[in-house]
Amino acid sequence: MSATAKKAAAGAANVPFAFRAYTPDQLRGVLHKMHLIRKFEEGAEDSYTRGLIHGTMHLSIGQEASALGICAPLKADDQITSTHRGHGHCIAKGAQVDRMFAEFFGKTTGYCKGRGGSMHIADVSAGNLGANGIVAGGIPIAVGAALSAKMQKNGKVVVCFFGDGANNEGAFHESLNMAAIWKLPVVFVCENNGYGMSTSTARSTAVERIADRAAAYAMPGVTVNGNDFSAVAEASTTAVERARRGEGPSLIETKTYRHRGHSKSDRNRYRTKEEIEEWKAMRDPINLFEAELQQFGVIDEAGIAAVRAAVEAEIAAGIEFAKTSPAPAAAEGLNFVYTELQ
Image (cartoon, rainbow, N blue to C red):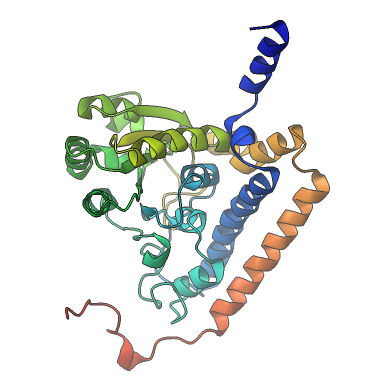
């Protein structure tokens, strides 16, 4: 190889994966969705505080790069299962924020006609098989969907999101074992934000890296910076392509952090204010991605301001749509809750 070719190869190696795999327009679209996820959850949080949303919610503010990076290589008919902290996953898979707000508000125009709420949004037509309030509950569902895809030979890949707390559940181990035996087209994604409710992973998990558990099931396991969109997208692309080739499952651990508590009732007494503020200041995924986009000339400050303004308008319109949408009639309260077998 000539000196010029070596220099060019070295330069390409220093360019993050996302800037080699996606166009500038696509990268700006990722930034738009990052802000959309963040502002959606902030809007939901504000609506909750105002008494417009009831029950509880689990916010993923601070984890936007993980959701978008994992979903980046998925096709429209690929499928996901999600968790109680799944708003970002829904939006990353293509959900509309107006219908999501309507679901939160308990309105008939919501994705589940107001019956699911924050923890149970699903849109099967877009490949979103649903969020799940049960810890590890979505993992065996994803394996079942992947088995269906393999039997039908339809080429679909299933991505299963779960939190670090789920890796100590029996469903995690049983599902990984079965998926490996049958070489199912499923990608297991552990979003490790450091705490399963109020218990740190250091106190609850024997291995240092959850991805190390993949070795026990003869599948690849990788740990990546979950706040780095490019790193997550690269790991996801590798795993999705492997699954699509029929080579079986993979386990990806994205190390990330939630800025808010476990749920709205969480008072954050198990972690320090200093820890939270350090993650916000130094490792916020949106700030990191914006800086990277500017570094590579994909966007400037004016472009970023335009993205933020467009997102603000979209969120405001979504909340207004939810407010003005009809609520289910009392007599129809049990409709769409049960499946009627034909």
